[in-house]
Length: 474
Picture 1: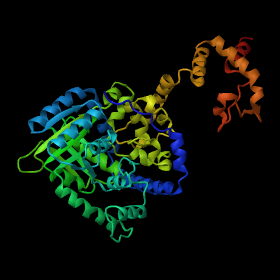
Picture 2 (picture 1 turned 45 degrees about the vertical axis):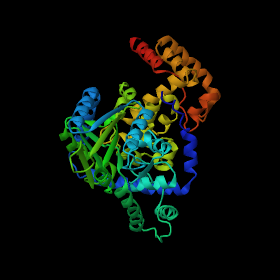
Picture 3 (picture 1 turned 180 degrees about the vertical axis):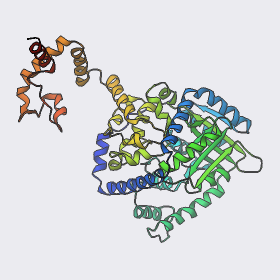
Picture 4 (picture 1 turned 60 degrees about the vertical axis):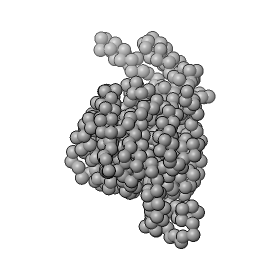
């Protein structure tokens, strides 16, 4: 059996700690504003952007409605092309499968393409326990690994670090004895020297997947540095760990998503590197390919009529870069591999609302995330839905919930509603100053901390209407 998920850190407490770090706020503000501006420029070039969003959303909705059929079609296509397919119900099973494959070829080191799915299941830790070293080859992921930290952004994991911090880190680790400035080209060159050796001497690579095509068995990874291309061609064994929601029905569907993803993620018209592979080819690239299909709570999300749209996500990070909460707190405050607005709705559904009950509240509900999402995920709608789940599942005696249920009964009865208005009109004087209700007692005080409430009028509309009708009849 898999281990029971541990509760995630309380977001408000983590956020307060992050807000106390001025360097973090400067780094986050500069990085997110730069990406936002680039995205807005390239999206503005397309007159059919909204049509592309609608197409992407429709394709993903189709996948969710027929996921079982498409997964079986994918399995058959991959096997037909010479690959092997493994099904993993949870993180523990996926880690076991990958570990056994690596051990089976006698390797004690693997190179990795950036993969949030492997971060989700803590694959690196599982491999380390088996004596296998996992080397991250994406520059930002390498930085995080060397610093022994966690990612703080879906696309730019080291967004919270500036280049001086990265230079100092490299001089303590992979570039000891080398003189480095904080110029990006020197930092990148130091990483390149280290990684080239890893690529050429490591027999096993592990990747994630941006997309998988059900009709052909093709797997796709998009990236910006070329490290993915190295991992996907040089090692003899390739293992891909993929969430079951990453499917597309047809190869033609890539036409839509290869326009949506780069513009929404890096603000580019196309990805610098788009790698597609189908099974194995004799004498060309890896000669052994394994696809691990991971559930890990996804079928639970699929069962929720409102929450399932979360599985449409293509991990572009546009919602993070636009979010006023994320851009000030950074990703570590969310306590999950999936930060920002998408993490606030995905993580509670994957691990259970009881384990992440503060995340649905990590939002101002401004709606900006919905506006920029390339597949039109209504994140505010899901946030409100999950807040309701928090109240129902974790706070059955919540005073606010009890009050709302009582109000529902009052509003359902005209007589009770009129009587409540009369009582409120009499009692509100204790809390009024200068014509407004500026404070409420006890746990109701939260309603008036940052707002004044309009008092109940001396005459209700119903009373006025009755008087008006009497006047006309007279």
